[in-house]
Length: 210
Image 1 (cartoon, helix red, strand yellow):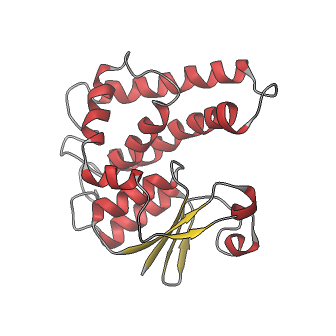
Image 2 (cartoon, one colour):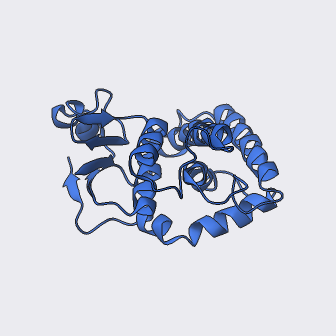
Image 3 (cartoon, rainbow, N blue to C red):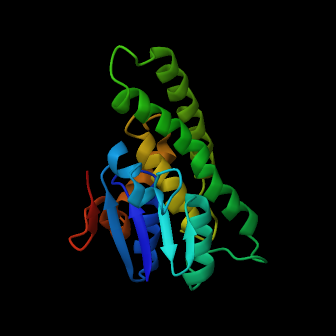
Protein backbone atom coordinates (compact mmCIF):
# COMPACT_ATOMS: atom_id res chain seq x y z
CA UNK A 1 0.00 0.00 0.00
CA UNK A 2 1.24 3.48 -0.92
CA UNK A 3 1.35 6.03 1.88
CA UNK A 4 1.61 9.77 1.16
CA UNK A 5 2.60 12.23 3.89
CA UNK A 6 0.95 15.55 3.12
CA UNK A 7 0.27 19.04 4.44
CA UNK A 8 -2.77 20.75 2.91
CA UNK A 9 -1.84 23.43 0.33
CA UNK A 10 1.84 22.43 0.44
CA UNK A 11 3.88 20.97 -2.44
CA UNK A 12 2.57 17.57 -1.44
CA UNK A 13 -0.74 18.54 -3.06
CA UNK A 14 1.04 17.87 -6.35
CA UNK A 15 1.63 14.24 -5.34
CA UNK A 16 -1.85 13.86 -3.87
CA UNK A 17 -3.44 15.20 -7.06
CA UNK A 18 -1.39 12.78 -9.16
CA UNK A 19 -2.47 9.84 -7.01
CA UNK A 20 -6.08 10.93 -7.45
CA UNK A 21 -5.58 11.13 -11.23
CA UNK A 22 -4.04 7.65 -11.28
CA UNK A 23 -7.00 6.24 -9.37
CA UNK A 24 -4.91 3.78 -7.37
CA UNK A 25 -5.44 2.94 -3.67
CA UNK A 26 -3.30 4.80 -1.15
CA UNK A 27 -3.26 5.92 2.45
CA UNK A 28 -3.07 9.63 3.16
CA UNK A 29 -1.37 10.91 6.30
CA UNK A 30 -2.14 14.59 6.87
CA UNK A 31 0.41 16.47 8.95
CA UNK A 32 -0.01 19.70 10.85
CA UNK A 33 2.13 22.35 9.18
CA UNK A 34 4.01 22.94 12.42
CA UNK A 35 7.59 22.52 13.49
CA UNK A 36 6.52 20.29 16.37
CA UNK A 37 5.03 17.71 13.99
CA UNK A 38 7.31 18.06 10.97
CA UNK A 39 10.44 18.09 13.13
CA UNK A 40 9.17 15.52 15.58
CA UNK A 41 11.02 12.20 15.92
CA UNK A 42 8.15 10.18 14.41
CA UNK A 43 8.20 12.04 11.11
CA UNK A 44 11.95 12.67 11.00
CA UNK A 45 12.40 8.90 11.03
CA UNK A 46 10.53 8.91 7.69
CA UNK A 47 11.81 12.15 6.10
CA UNK A 48 15.19 13.33 7.44
CA UNK A 49 14.44 17.01 6.72
CA UNK A 50 10.88 16.95 8.04
CA UNK A 51 9.26 18.20 4.83
CA UNK A 52 6.46 17.13 2.51
CA UNK A 53 5.75 15.33 0.31
CA UNK A 54 7.07 11.97 1.33
CA UNK A 55 5.85 8.80 -0.32
CA UNK A 56 6.33 5.29 1.03
CA UNK A 57 5.61 2.30 -1.18
CA UNK A 58 6.64 -0.95 0.46
CA UNK A 59 10.38 -0.74 1.16
CA UNK A 60 10.80 2.40 -0.97
CA UNK A 61 10.72 5.92 0.47
CA UNK A 62 10.88 9.01 -1.77
CA UNK A 63 10.80 12.63 -0.69
CA UNK A 64 11.27 14.83 -3.77
CA UNK A 65 8.06 15.68 -5.61
CA UNK A 66 9.64 15.44 -9.07
CA UNK A 67 11.03 12.00 -8.26
CA UNK A 68 7.65 10.97 -6.82
CA UNK A 69 5.96 12.04 -10.06
CA UNK A 70 8.35 10.02 -12.20
CA UNK A 71 8.12 6.99 -9.93
CA UNK A 72 4.32 6.92 -9.79
CA UNK A 73 4.04 7.33 -13.55
CA UNK A 74 6.64 4.68 -14.36
CA UNK A 75 5.28 2.26 -11.79
CA UNK A 76 1.51 2.75 -11.96
CA UNK A 77 0.41 4.75 -15.00
CA UNK A 78 -1.16 2.86 -17.89
CA UNK A 79 -0.21 5.41 -20.54
CA UNK A 80 -2.40 8.44 -19.91
CA UNK A 81 -0.15 10.58 -17.71
CA UNK A 82 3.34 9.33 -18.49
CA UNK A 83 5.55 9.90 -21.52
CA UNK A 84 8.01 6.97 -21.24
CA UNK A 85 11.50 6.66 -22.73
CA UNK A 86 11.22 6.54 -26.49
CA UNK A 87 8.04 8.62 -26.60
CA UNK A 88 8.51 11.69 -28.87
CA UNK A 89 7.36 13.98 -26.03
CA UNK A 90 9.54 12.36 -23.36
CA UNK A 91 12.09 15.15 -22.97
CA UNK A 92 9.51 17.95 -22.94
CA UNK A 93 7.47 15.94 -20.44
CA UNK A 94 10.49 15.80 -18.16
CA UNK A 95 11.23 19.48 -18.72
CA UNK A 96 7.78 20.57 -17.57
CA UNK A 97 7.66 18.14 -14.66
CA UNK A 98 10.80 19.80 -13.29
CA UNK A 99 10.00 23.35 -14.44
CA UNK A 100 7.16 23.17 -11.95
CA UNK A 101 9.70 23.45 -9.14
CA UNK A 102 11.27 26.53 -10.74
CA UNK A 103 7.87 28.16 -10.29
CA UNK A 104 7.10 26.68 -6.89
CA UNK A 105 10.34 27.90 -5.29
CA UNK A 106 9.25 31.51 -5.87
CA UNK A 107 5.79 30.72 -4.55
CA UNK A 108 7.31 29.13 -1.46
CA UNK A 109 9.36 32.27 -0.86
CA UNK A 110 6.15 34.30 -1.05
CA UNK A 111 4.50 31.96 1.45
CA UNK A 112 7.39 32.57 3.85
CA UNK A 113 7.23 36.32 3.40
CA UNK A 114 3.45 36.72 3.68
CA UNK A 115 2.40 33.87 5.95
CA UNK A 116 5.26 32.48 8.03
CA UNK A 117 7.45 35.54 8.68
CA UNK A 118 5.68 38.03 10.93
CA UNK A 119 5.95 41.80 10.58
CA UNK A 120 8.24 43.72 10.85
CA UNK A 121 10.67 41.03 9.64
CA UNK A 122 9.03 40.67 6.23
CA UNK A 123 11.00 42.15 3.37
CA UNK A 124 9.10 44.24 0.78
CA UNK A 125 12.17 43.99 -1.47
CA UNK A 126 12.12 40.18 -1.40
CA UNK A 127 8.36 40.12 -1.97
CA UNK A 128 8.65 42.43 -4.99
CA UNK A 129 11.56 40.45 -6.44
CA UNK A 130 9.88 37.08 -6.01
CA UNK A 131 6.60 38.41 -7.45
CA UNK A 132 8.43 39.52 -10.59
CA UNK A 133 10.22 36.18 -10.91
CA UNK A 134 6.96 34.31 -10.45
CA UNK A 135 5.25 36.46 -13.06
CA UNK A 136 8.05 35.78 -15.56
CA UNK A 137 7.78 32.06 -14.88
CA UNK A 138 4.05 32.25 -15.59
CA UNK A 139 4.84 34.04 -18.84
CA UNK A 140 6.82 31.03 -20.05
CA UNK A 141 3.84 28.77 -19.36
CA UNK A 142 1.50 31.22 -21.07
CA UNK A 143 3.60 31.14 -24.21
CA UNK A 144 3.62 27.34 -24.23
CA UNK A 145 -0.18 27.30 -24.01
CA UNK A 146 -0.74 29.76 -26.87
CA UNK A 147 -1.92 27.07 -29.29
CA UNK A 148 -3.00 24.20 -27.02
CA UNK A 149 -5.05 23.32 -23.95
CA UNK A 150 -2.30 21.42 -22.15
CA UNK A 151 1.48 21.64 -22.03
CA UNK A 152 2.09 18.78 -24.46
CA UNK A 153 0.54 18.44 -27.92
CA UNK A 154 -0.89 15.00 -27.10
CA UNK A 155 -2.92 16.32 -24.16
CA UNK A 156 -3.11 16.25 -20.38
CA UNK A 157 -0.25 14.54 -18.54
CA UNK A 158 1.53 14.47 -15.19
CA UNK A 159 3.45 17.52 -16.42
CA UNK A 160 0.19 19.45 -16.13
CA UNK A 161 -0.27 18.13 -12.60
CA UNK A 162 3.19 19.41 -11.67
CA UNK A 163 2.92 22.81 -13.36
CA UNK A 164 -0.78 23.11 -12.54
CA UNK A 165 -0.06 22.94 -8.82
CA UNK A 166 2.55 25.69 -9.25
CA UNK A 167 -0.01 27.86 -11.06
CA UNK A 168 -2.45 27.17 -8.23
CA UNK A 169 0.18 28.37 -5.76
CA UNK A 170 1.16 31.38 -7.88
CA UNK A 171 -2.36 32.75 -8.19
CA UNK A 172 -2.45 33.30 -4.45
CA UNK A 173 0.31 35.92 -4.77
CA UNK A 174 0.33 37.37 -8.28
CA UNK A 175 -2.57 38.12 -10.64
CA UNK A 176 -2.93 35.78 -13.59
CA UNK A 177 -4.85 38.32 -15.70
CA UNK A 178 -1.86 39.33 -17.83
CA UNK A 179 -1.46 35.70 -18.92
CA UNK A 180 -4.73 34.91 -20.66
CA UNK A 181 -3.74 31.39 -21.70
CA UNK A 182 -2.76 30.58 -18.11
CA UNK A 183 -6.13 31.89 -16.91
CA UNK A 184 -7.91 29.45 -19.22
CA UNK A 185 -5.47 26.70 -18.25
CA UNK A 186 -6.18 27.19 -14.54
CA UNK A 187 -9.92 27.10 -15.24
CA UNK A 188 -9.52 23.73 -17.00
CA UNK A 189 -7.38 22.44 -14.14
CA UNK A 190 -9.90 23.60 -11.54
CA UNK A 191 -12.64 21.63 -13.27
CA UNK A 192 -10.82 18.30 -12.99
CA UNK A 193 -12.42 16.05 -10.34
CA UNK A 194 -9.03 14.75 -9.18
CA UNK A 195 -7.78 18.30 -8.61
CA UNK A 196 -10.89 19.12 -6.59
CA UNK A 197 -10.38 16.02 -4.47
CA UNK A 198 -6.77 16.99 -3.81
CA UNK A 199 -7.92 20.27 -2.25
CA UNK A 200 -10.18 18.65 0.30
CA UNK A 201 -9.43 16.78 3.47
CA UNK A 202 -10.14 13.06 3.03
CA UNK A 203 -12.42 11.65 5.69
CA UNK A 204 -10.27 8.52 5.90
CA UNK A 205 -6.95 10.36 6.22
CA UNK A 206 -4.75 9.54 9.18
CA UNK A 207 -3.76 12.68 11.07
CA UNK A 208 -0.48 13.60 12.74
CA UNK A 209 -1.00 16.67 14.87
CA UNK A 210 0.88 18.61 17.52
